Length: 161
Image (tube, rainbow, N blue to C red; front, side):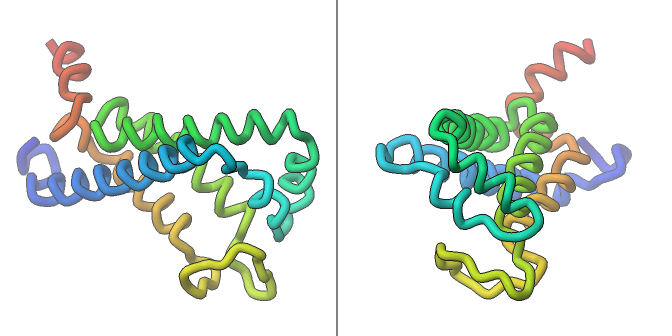
């Protein structure tokens, strides 16, 4: 990529670094859950508050649904993380990450008057780390960071020939 493409290489490099860092975060979160045999999303779902809490609480009430959610959550985090970290199917990985982060945000919205059982490392009002990472992924999805530095270059180079 160069200046005539509408974005300088320094900006693309910065967005690529952001993509890799978010990818590492997703990948690490997924691996920690995968290698923690006692981990389950059930407690997180049960502590949901806000306008969709009934949906998340009802999911937690069905063990079969919880098992599916646990599987999808762990492997979603791992696969999204790998995609972002390696720059592989970057745009798809970004949108999948946005979807997962939106579910996290909606299950535990940082709104006034809501108090969650799980401690948070900060105090939030409307904007939390999930929303920030979600917006960052939307921004990254608009730029060819995987083609700049990532495995997407192998996919898109052969398509452009």
